[in-house]
Length: 207
Image (cartoon, rainbow, N blue to C red; front, side):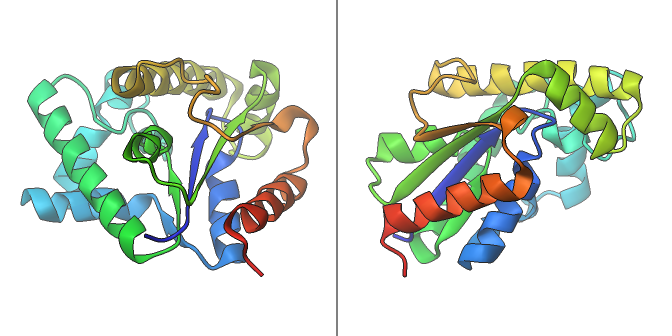
């Protein structure tokens, strides 16, 4: 199995760009958008149909059209059987990739998944920040209006917390399955990437 970095994040912390930059620096495969595409293929569904399902919670909460829709709920809303099937398929994809490649995996309770598998070559990162910092980041970095920023944080935080709790039984900000928790209020973006990169290199004995 390859080396795996998992990264969970609160909305507005810029955790996903951090994960992408980290993957680029380390030469690891970045796993996030392609997971849903491969899940659609495995489930015999049109990728846009599955994306629409994946996005239903935000659509239901009046954020239709937002480019951050997909961050709301990895498993969509309402259809429990489809949620269970989608999570099973996405888990299979994540494990398959980790068997072949060094990976940075965003979200999907991957920290818990690999912890329960007993995987040793893993570095689990959680990115957080106080509400006010994330609110300002939504406006300055994500170009949301003040109303949109407040709505996105409220809805996406709630959805991610519910998803993580349902899978792990833990609070979304719990340190239980995390090796490093970054508070982005006091860390510059590039410095944060530097910190994770250095610790990952040490964790995996990379040159």
